[in-house]
Structure formats: C-alpha cells, structure tokens
Length: 250
Image (spheres, rainbow, N blue to C red):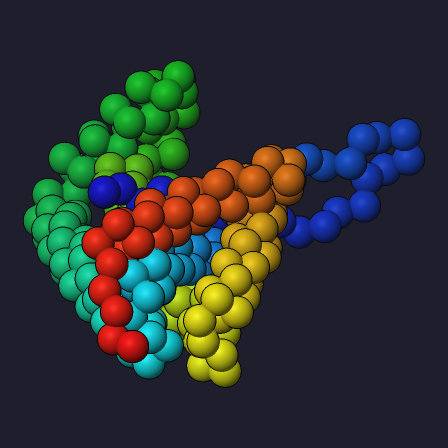
C-alpha cells in the first residue's frame, strides 16, 4: 500500500485585480475525519443488524440489550485491534524501507542521484534540468531521504501515522455508531424499542451519508440514500433470519 505525498493546507492568496483566484485542491490524504465517519458507519450497520436480528426472534428485551452491548464492545475492540496491527505492520515496513534508502544514500550517493535523474526525465523534465533538480535534492542527507521516499516509495517520512491513535479512533468511532440503535433498548423493550431502534438507525444513516458527501463532493442526498439503503438491507435480512428461526424466553 503506497501513501502519497501529504499536501499541506492551501494558503489563501489575494488575486490581483482582474485575475481569477487560485485553484486549490483539498487534501485527499488527511483522512482522520473521513476514517472516523467510516468507523461510525461500520458500527451503525453492524449493530443495527445484530440488534434487529436478535429482536426478530423475540427473545425478550434483556437478551437484545445484552447482544447489543456485546456487539458494541466486541466490534469496537476488534476494529481497534485490526487497525493497530495493520497500521503497525505498515509503519514497520515503511521504517525498514526508509532505513534501506538511507543506507543507499550514504553508501552510494552517485547511484541515488542517477535514480532521481531518471525519475525526473521519465516525467518529461529535460535531462539538464533533471540533473540540476537531482543535485539540489541530494544536497543534504535529510532532504535526499525525504525526496527519495516520496519519489520512489510514495512515503512521507514525517507522516507515517500513529498505530495507537488510529486504534483509539477506530474504537471510539465504531462504538459511537454501534450505540445509536442500542439506545432505545436501554430504556424500552418490545415493539416500541424495535421501532425506535429502526428510526434512530435510519436517521443516523442519513446523517452519516451526508457527512461522507463532504469528502466526496457528491450530492448529500445521494450519499445519504445509499447509506440508508445499505443499513436497511442489512437490518432487514438479519431481522428476517431472526424471525424465521424464532426463539422465545417469555
């Protein structure tokens, strides 16, 4: 998995009279907020499916509450553990590649210089200019490592990420989404709790879909409808399975 260069925030500039304003691109790599929204979406879909699947079998409010709480806790820990392990492995891989690149820069700078020249030439830069650019980028070991990491490996050495922070974010966002359909079962039971859980999940699905549209720049209603359909389909299937199997503790 390659991680592209991390773009900084665009600086607002005042155009000269008669000149169009600068066109700024939003960063598509700074994904902490986006990842949190996806985490909420995962928790919402997972737990509303579990809760309604259990509720469909009519086992009693206590069983549904237990299942909802278990789903929230287990899912949040699973998401956090998976995020930590995968990101830790990715970070260790990147650190290894950076160490190898640093060694190459120290021991064979001429070869690394030629690599940069070839990279720039492959992008259409004139050979003479490519040589000048490569020489400038190889001016110091730190700059050389950062440049080679970006150009060859697609890595930003200063933004490898924190596995612990990623795990904590995944835990919190999943738990938040999973809590929404569970709340009605903490204060009610039976049909009233089921209906309230469906309504709460539907409203949350629309909100999550609308939030995702902020990152994709697609119409909010399109993203909201897609999220609602996905959540409804998952909940309907599990509720149907629960009803078909059936169990009663009354």
